[in-house]
Image 1: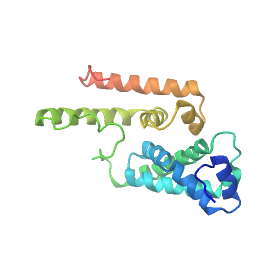
Image 2: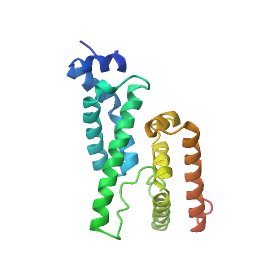
Image 3: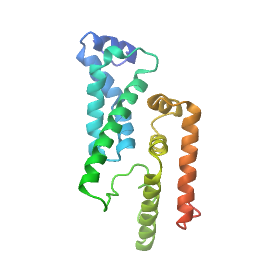
Image 4: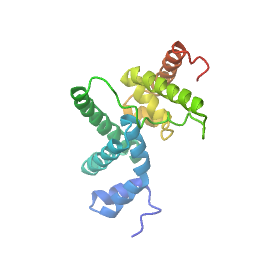
Length: 197
């Protein structure tokens, strides 16, 4: 039976009754969103892939707990976010044990798009300095501000979805995004980047 025109709720019902193809269709429909949510939390493609796989497995195991209060996608993204945050906490513990300095600046989402194509060597150096300043500013945000900002910057989720994922009211999400941006602008201004953002 085709699952292409079936809505998520029907696919969930089929999957609950053992239809593996139905759950496979749910995975196919939401794979990109799940991956982007995990990437927003983790900043690493490899870790995001692992967290996404963990999230799909957890969702499959918890399918009976899906009540339909929110959309399946939002429910799945909530699971994804928790999986990614748990992975991030574990990685941070390992990271602190291994290295106290020399942090890896690679694979930060939504920051590496600042540089223009084919910049001059001078422009490339300035752009790289700005990217580092932005990454550092994001790192100094509290986790609550940083997480919401990265989710919003991914462009994959509405403020309402983010609020549901994090269990936070919509007004709080909007404030956190605004406050995160304000703090980053202030830090960049303090570093001499007054005309950015």
